[in-house]
Image 1 (cartoon, rainbow, N blue to C red):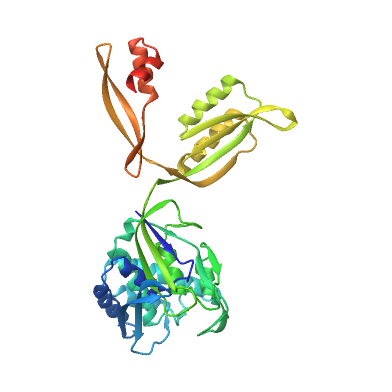
Image 2 (cartoon, rainbow, N blue to C red; image 1 turned 30 degrees about the horizontal axis):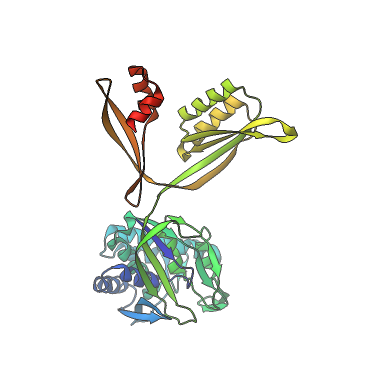
Length: 389
């Protein structure tokens, strides 16, 4: 399963995340009770959920109404109160991680330490409700066991009035929190990404992508924002299954123009022994019309150093190109064994079977098994292959 958080249209806020999670199936009554109890340590709130229509999109709106005036609170006292909440340990720990992201951003922006930072908007009971509610819903839907992909965040534009005065949008703290994400300005002159929403997004997302990957949608939830614009002010969360499995690889390349055919063949085998997933050698014409070869190796990150060492030692290359963390789509595969009778003798053959959407798209016998049978039976490899297929 893959979960995609899509804030490209109208940004992100804590209550929008809660609304989208309820739209996906989180229990609204349970969340109301949890949120109101958690926020009570900072000031009473009232939580309501409403199904509303935002410019043609049916969505869930989570409204957190403050019943008491909030006061600023320093970070250590704030964390102590969070730790004392009667909640699942996972919810407490992840919520603290979210607030720590905000505190670090605020301290950097204002030139303070964590011990001296005071929460204003973020320390208010409604923001505490947003974080606790979002994280509780996240765990209640078992999303911690799913891969979560975040798409670029629309941050809005213009200026906004805060406890620190009038500041440009996105707010400095939001920019700091989202420094490893992707932001989009607009599409309106208004604040669309709050520090709370941004911090939750960064905490629960496993990967940030520019586009939706190859998926098959199973369910979609929409969380409504408070403001009304000329476009649907909603956060979309997509629950999907991958059509192909995800695989992250490194691609390692170098040019070769001085090795013999025997030395290239030895290098080929050496790289496979070093952990290469695949090795290819392509003839090419290099500068000054010299014939040469392009060596390309597909590697897992953990095998990269061994492979680089082998290439340097065996080729004497002075430079190797590395493209790390490339996404590779792979079909689901499994290995099955089957017994065949050839010349009155039983042989076991392993088949690699590939699937797409549950359908078999390939079923090939392993070469090493065919080679073993050919050598043992005395029959040509081509004949063995035809008989097995």
